[in-house]
Amino acid sequence: MNKFLYCVLFGCLLIGSACSSRQAISYKIKTQTNSKNIKPTDTIHVSLNTLENTKKHTFYWNDQEVNAGYIVANKTGEHYIKAVIETEKGVKEITKSIRVFAANKPKVFTYKLVNTYPHDINAYTQGLEFVGETLYESTGQYGASSLRKVDVKTGEIIQNLRLDNAYFAEGITYFDGKIIQLTWKKKLGFVYNANDLTIEKSFRYVKSPEGWGLCSDGNVLYKTDGSEKLWTIDPKTFKELESKDIVTHNTFLSKVNELEYVDGLIYANTYQFNKDVVVIIVPETGIVTGVVDFSGLKKRVTQHNRLDVFNGIAYHPKRKTFFVTGKYWDKIFEVEIFEK
Image (cartoon, rainbow, N blue to C red; front, side, top):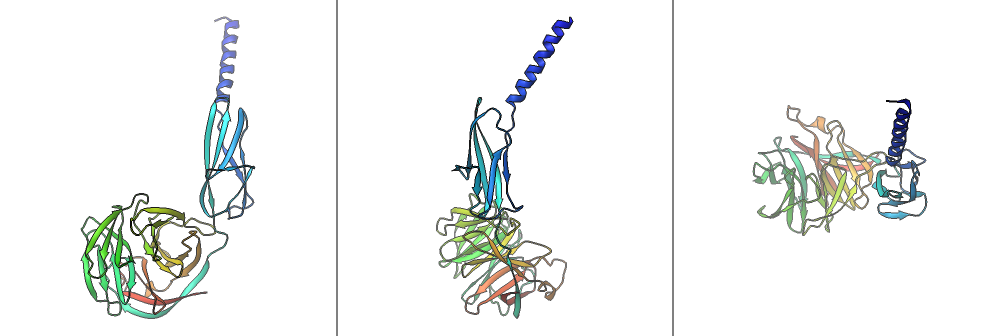
């Protein structure tokens, strides 16, 4: 190959490489804030990493167009910034997720022990619910799942309905004369007559992948699924209406388990092996406003090889106390909750 031809070919390769480089521009959304954890009302400054070959670009916050180069984070949870970029080659869309945390740290609460009652040591407790003076309990594990009526003062099981071995029972709640029970991975829930525990129907979860905790405010149901989501559910159709992210000042909280609705707030167990805590959630926002430290209760139960985590919370409206226990615990504790 003569020297002239070699130079021509080498020059074409360089030009082709440069053209290819220009065509392969990688657009990214850049964000800048004054704080590490973004809070509501914080300002997020938004830009692109490059404007090369860009004819026009528009930013969107959760599909709402942003007119300036900044966004005010107006509420907690996970949000999305989208950029629609017009280039010489056409229109390109890119997105970036943004997490907005609660403005304040949760308050810290503790408890006062009021009474101690016996509890079935073989119960893998998933849900507790008072209806009048009767305590309903859902227990889990494949082959041992059940729905029970329990005399809380004696620990006597008044009625015990065993579930098919295919189901791993989860949280329960009471609504309009019915006990509603979730199952873990089958995406299936059951509705029972509260008086005699006869099953009336089943329902499926469509959007939420698993069944964990369940409670009701008398109008809607609230459900968790092991993720960071708190779902609102229609109690008649059982359709998932919407979800909120469960957030504190510095984290998105997952593994939120048994739920109890009391005076506008949700009290929720968390599935943790090293901490016996209940978090207090505002259902309208998903913000955790309080954490109840239940340290010490687990030491009061019989210690054995199957002893498992703190789980199970029910509120007694007349007594204005909470009843709490754990999986394979031989005691239920009646407590009062107050701020430290």
